[in-house]
Image (cartoon, rainbow, N blue to C red; front, side, top):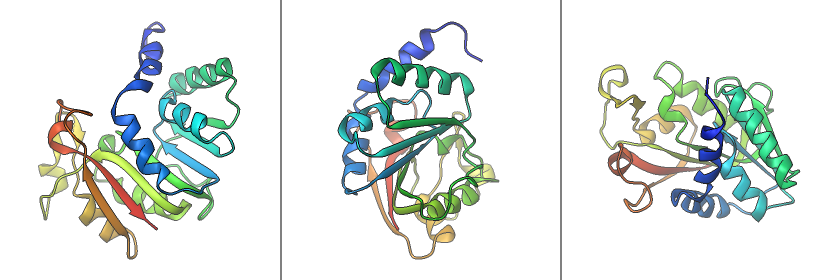
Length: 201
């Protein structure tokens, strides 16, 4: 899928992207925790940061891309990081995770690739496997009554009203939506739609 190794190096270097610190801060508010799962982890830069901060936690990441998972495993092995487990798995294939088996589950620009035919089922499954909170860094819109098949596809990504989606999908969720500051991730739709959606379970 990818040619050469430059993409993997670029993704490793993205560990310093400023939005990641905000994501780490939001995840940290749900301490104490023993387990964290990232959906769509690529090579694992977020899990790399979390492993440094929480060396005793069990960290897991799944991604559809086998090349990314391979590169991530190699990266963590080189760094001597032993508390991160990476697997090739789709976001809609979460049956291996039992109910309430993960303390915090998060995404980072993953659900914007999920179409309206799957998004509700995935959100319901995320809530099923998670005990404390979901932290989603995605594209959010405040527009109501969206026809998702027609109204929410923008520059190759899906934009959802997560307040409506989560209320329709999860029993009594406590939802907090924070706009991502422009200085952390501007341009390419993030300036308009970027948000961190937190769901306390």
